[in-house]
Image 1 (cartoon, rainbow, N blue to C red):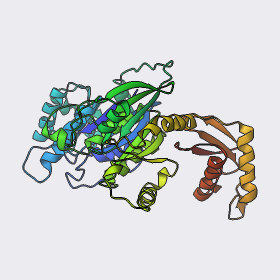
Image 2: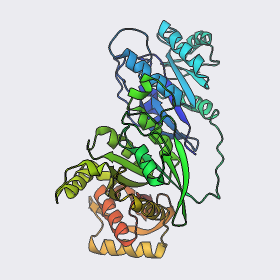
Image 3: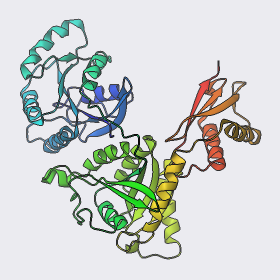
Image 4: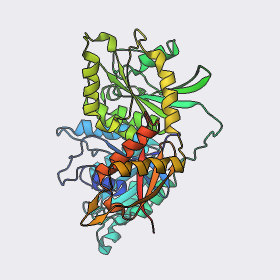
Length: 435
């Protein structure tokens, strides 16, 4: 099942991006004192007490005529619609404002669990002022200090208490794959072409698919579940015109997939939005196939395919392991190859190798390229073992993990890929100190 989604909402300049960065554990959002600096929703994947969830930072909700305020409000409302739990952030220093009450009215209509958090409680004296916020009607307020990282544990305990319990069907052996990408790259057309029927509405207008649709089918005795992720949950101009909404839809589908098909539009080339969506699939550790759709629409010569593939490799350096397929939903060019490739990538994604064979490969690699040294201290690799699959994850026991340079780790990963078939799947290497 897809992970729960938590949205941080509130008026501008209450510290949403600071709290977002604290929970995410890194500086993802830009933090600035200027109100309204976060104009778009920002997404990340994190966890608390072993429970993973998606986290959304939003632009502040504010009623007014200043530039971007309506767009910020629209983005925040989209995040609220997608969230399972909402953190309503206010500031103790400014007290309750008209904008806070306007946000509260929006949240009353959301019919979602709302956790009220009061930020900027940087000292004990300010804790007495949080009781004023009971009047907003969301129960006990949780005092926070984003600048000092205080109070986050209690807040997150309250957040995860509202997560739904998901039941996992362990007996379902079908390969789940999703089509992800920007609106109007042809995902719905690919769904119809793969199935050989008009399963979903196809239109040239971006955002016409309203709901994610799971479709089960069989190909050469292998069972698949396909998810079309173009879906927009609600009707309305905002949903149809907000391209960034596709990121949230893609994140949920990726969490629930074994393999993802990253769909690009051959006519439009690669956009920044494509990189953001593909990056999340990579970070989530899913098997990945890059699918270039509408290939039939290009005027081609003997160099077109090679040049397009080179461009993809340059733009998606971190996806060097992902196979690339050039297809056409209209003519069904090469679509018959997709099920077999999805099955191959899924097999590689779940591949487990014997420790003896793994260590032979690593020892051979060291013989060809000796381990690096730093200040006279050389990295020693004692042995390695695979600890999990999907994606394949290996622990390498060493004398000092700090001596493992990034370039040498990449060298070992490449040698492991050469020895074992891991096409289409990321490979994770973890260095640990052998005591």
